[in-house]
Length: 200
Image 1 (cartoon, rainbow, N blue to C red):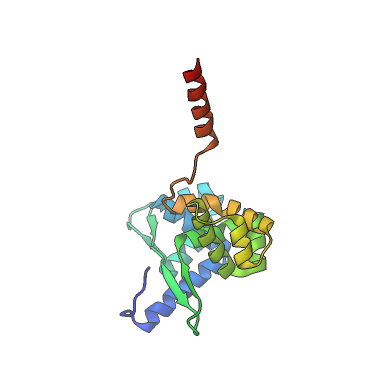
Image 2: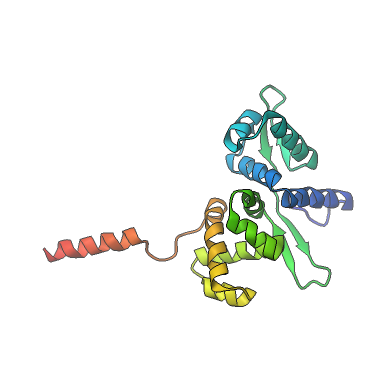
């Protein structure tokens, strides 16, 4: 749902309001994120995976279809649905800040109902703060920043930075191609065994 300047203002505003619904309602965000990850699903699969009642599942699906972020791929029963790509950038009027809303951010918002660390972070820092933390998490997973640097930049405690980085880590690995920075414990243990084997 990437929008450019050649779109009519009504379409852009509709898209923005649709995405705003996802950011305000974690259950809708969770459903959108699930469909985005699975690529094509039926309502029954949604119900089974997310533990939704049938009426709730159909209500949510209809809302997402009406919002334009979900579409049916067939008219035959059971219908299958796919998520529309979302990549919406919002710039503050003074031009000093810019926020990009992506499926990864929507997924993080959707997890606030099941992850107390994400929920607490959103309560304290808002969705914009979560978007910033998500950016830091990507950078951290690429080995470019530490939790202490994030804490200093955002004026939060190192513990709060580490907690949200750990909470967002699975989301980053699901949505971005991240190569692990550095060696894992298993790599180090294997290297130690190889060295010990050479000494024998």
